[in-house]
Image (cartoon, rainbow, N blue to C red; front, top):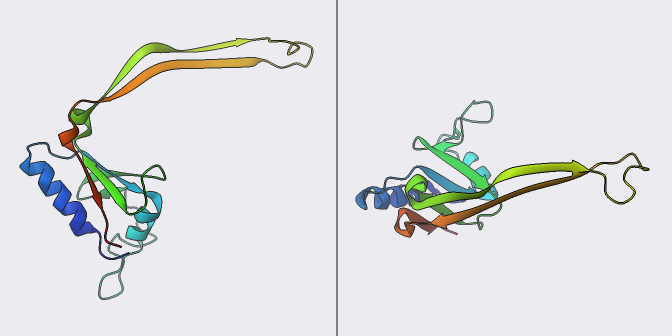
Length: 132
């Protein structure tokens, strides 16, 4: 992977200019591990190396890596400003015997919660691509 950090830095700059400073970064899992393996001109890892106890952060911002993010793409955002999680129903967990569970020494569990994720300020989210 070519040096990807300048693309993240540009997105962070855009967020600051828009007066919506980023609170986190989301990247693909493979991209994250690719970034961890980047070395400088002297052969040293820029992330601190395999034995360094380095938290998942880039420029002091927390990084979440997930396979849900497309490879080669990233999301920088002011997540507290951009999105809201609405909890429509408190989490419930019920246990009981259904059908022949009692004779088989089983218990059926049912867990439910109703939530909605709303994007309230899409301009606070910046999607970008890493170079190929």
